[in-house]
Length: 382
Image 1 (cartoon, rainbow, N blue to C red):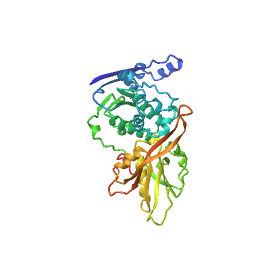
Image 2: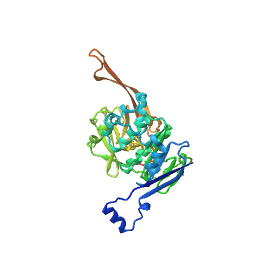
Image 3: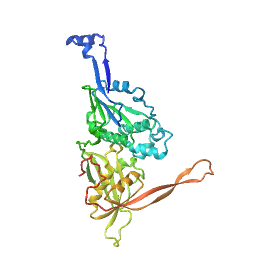
Image 4: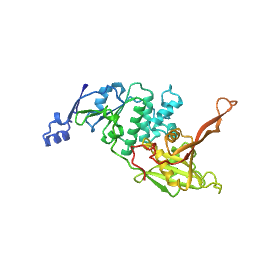
């Protein structure tokens, strides 16, 4: 345990207005314009997630700066450069992809954008990934979730704590928002409002989150909303043709996800059921972290499975891993799609590059038990 002391003091202004305001209530400037923080805490023993929390002016930023020195908010992020280009040069492409996906930035188009072009939620995840790729010790982030709405804040917190524990990283977050505590499940908390320290290292290992967030799947009349989500998808901007069914995922009245089903192969009476393929699965990047992608696929598939055979053919590694763990889906085929990249590299005599992209095909088989892939932290869709 170590004692951390922070003394903050602002000098009273000398203008007529300042003096008049202070005199009107006989203000004791030494007491009212100063703040002291004195707390004993263990922030060095083994941990993955630490939280320094408190209201504005409570001393949390000063405490973090004094405790962590050069590690505090030492950001060298270039807001004009693509996200993926700023990760440590020693990382392979696969390692870059794993790092970005693990912090909840799983949309490949987001990787290619300059950091400054991202939304506030995406930007915070990108900054964490960039800084983590270049640091060996502890990452300290100030003003965590201060500029995003509260559902996005919880998604971001869920992603970062899962990442820290999965990869055994040390991350300390400084925030004024108490609603993220359940989603961060920190190993320790310093509360600068009441000078308290809470060691949760044993508690957080078996902690069960009480708060639930409800999302709702709604049938859409057409594919019009696909335009809002197409920029986050790794394939064509076009909506698939043929017989189609379309769904949206909502938080209140805000649509945060899109799901389509289409009949790729015309039906013949040789088959008992018509065949639909799910496609264009997108969760807005700000809300990644809750496991909503597979939840949306499963819930929408259930509503169609009685009348149709449901398949999915895709190249998304996260979806493949989730389906392999699920009792609802069975792997039917795998292969590669080969296509030419536009142009050539090097001189005019350089051969055209050929790109091979692996794909998987799954069939929905349903199950009698609750799908194990559904994240326990989110209330059932419906």
